[in-house]
Image (cartoon, rainbow, N blue to C red; front, side, top):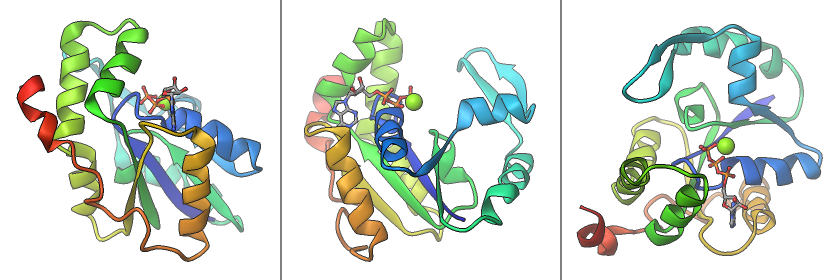
Amino acid sequence: MAVIAITGTPGAGKTSVSEELRRRGYTVIDMNEHLRRHDLLGEKDVPRDTYNVDMEALNDSLEEYRRMPGIVFLDSHLAHECDCSRIIVLRCSPQVLAGRLRARGYSDAKVRENVQAEILDVILCEATDSDIPVNEIDCTEGTPSDAVDFIERILNGETEICPPGSVDWSGEMEEWF
Ligand SMILES: Nc1ncnc2c1ncn2[C@@H]1O[C@H](COP(=O)(O)OP(=O)(O)OP(=O)(O)O)[C@@H](O)[C@H]1O
Ligand SMILES: [Mg+2]
């Protein structure tokens, strides 16, 4: 299978877009569930509230999917660090992202940390540092279904739409730093 990474800052919309991909019949790996099932969660990084993951072991565990025909999507902020053939970075404007994360009950500090990462294009830069083709899709407005329409167009050969660099939150820098 061609492995396509669906990545982005928490709250950008990865899981919502993944649900729509599944609804349209695609296979999507929920990375958290996959990591637990394959016993790939390492030690907890307490200050960052994340688990360390052995990326080599994770890539090995994805081999079973690579051997199948078709496309498999990975839903995770780690997805772009996996061996994949395309990276889709989902984006969300700072104000709207903050609202989504506050609605989850995140602390002000955690909201700010994630919004700052979104403004600084942290995940986009990590993605474009690889040799893998990247697209970014703005999920601030519209629906997950709109985002999946873009993903399908990209996979059908319109690879030039939604290029990296098309989203720019730098105008909101002052408010959040
Ligand atoms: N166009 C859109 N695309 C995706 N999500 C959207 C869109 N518009 C609004 N939303 C809303 O934004 C929220 C996105 O949350 P979601 O859990 O999908 O994010 P996530 O990227 O998977 O976060 P995490 O990294 O924490 O798993 C949902 O409440 C969803 O309904
Ligand atoms: Mg999610």
